[in-house]
Image (cartoon, rainbow, N blue to C red; front, top):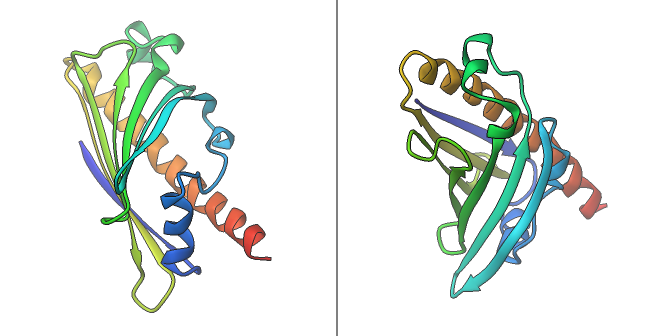
Length: 166
């Protein structure tokens, strides 16, 4: 299941991309509503790219039908991402601690100048859980959490950038 979201910001795109090119986060991601912990495993620069690896522990409401398969401990995963300075883009994949063989999650987050000024972030994500009956239900729930996180992160980016510019 795929989804795309776009958020606009009243800051020049360079304000955002300069922070990302420095290898910094735009806001404290641990403060997202469903994140329990986020731990950096490594971050290193290779030319115009920054390779990052984090372990995440998240929480969320698991639908009753899926609770027989998905337990809270299954919501831990590794995120591997690459920031590309030239394309102003993150490409990420999630590697779950459980269900590695049946779950595939990828995301691409691209920053560009917004029409009319400011910056925009376009997020394209794909989630696939190959478990009969339960997989499509879990995909929908995960996408809803992703969308909420993306909307919340946009607000947190706006607040954090406003603080930095004042």
